[in-house]
Image (tube, helix red, strand yellow):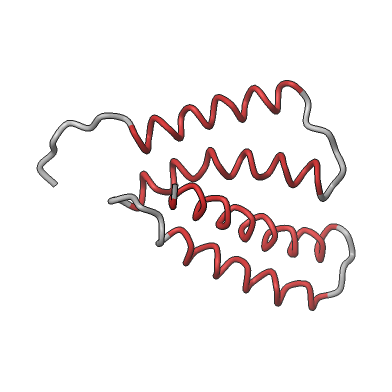
Length: 111
């Protein structure tokens, strides 16, 4: 459960941080938008280190599925655009993939 909470918070921070840059470069927002954006991206990176997973690569790969779902929530809630069925199907496929990466049975490996 902790991993899902960490991934959710990390996704919020990553999307908000990237959106700050998007706002500055594409929407004409003031340059000061970058300060909270950078802070959010630093918090995002720190949060991913808090996930209950033994390896960085698998953590990032599994996080990707959560990020995609969070991005579609951002699309709906912040940008007021309704995801279509292909967005939702794609997000579901990604969540299944993230679950396989996080919880799939692993053969013992020699480091």
